[in-house]
Figure: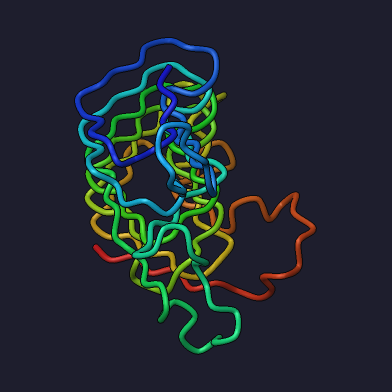
Amino acid sequence: SYYLTNLNNIFEDNMALEGDKYGVWVYLRNATESPFFLMKICPVGIALSSFKNNSVFSHEIGLFISPGYWPREKPCEPFRDLMNMNQPFIKNKPLNATFNGFRGYRNRDSGVFAQKVGAVKFDNFELIENKRAGFEIRTIETIDGWFSLRNSKFKGSLIDKAGDRIGLITAKSDGNYYENISFVSFDNTLNSIAIQTCSGCEKDTDTDIPGGKIIQISA
């Protein structure tokens, strides 16, 4: 329904009802050349202006962020300094971007799926009776404390056993931080799980992120 290619815009109070694929697809290129100005634009690194109070009902995925979003002070310069593993972001510091207020209701796969993000915060989300998962984050590309999901509610369904299997699926990387989130109507059986860790690990052969990951959950 909505296709966002540059987040230096105001996207507020929108609703998407009954669609085939994505209610809101955030698709940000690494770099584009503007036909109107002699300048390089790098949407994947540009700061978010405003994303607030949007709703998606009955799509495949409500909010889909793919291939990724990692805003930073210098949008067109490398995000990570591979020669400085102790302080990889010192030359190009991450910028906070907050998606504030989103309601994903009865989507056929997930309420939210984020493929890869940097210093992105999700605040005040309501994920209600989504068929496979409420919120799934695959990879976090930043230091601990920059990514977060806060002040959010998950509601499954104990009536429809074919859906609402998982509330939250955490990332397969470090940096997971969740605060003040609640779960209703999940009975933690095979058909109804509040939290599952390591997004994509059940089918992923990638071994560049080995070992257990730190997940912080605060009431």
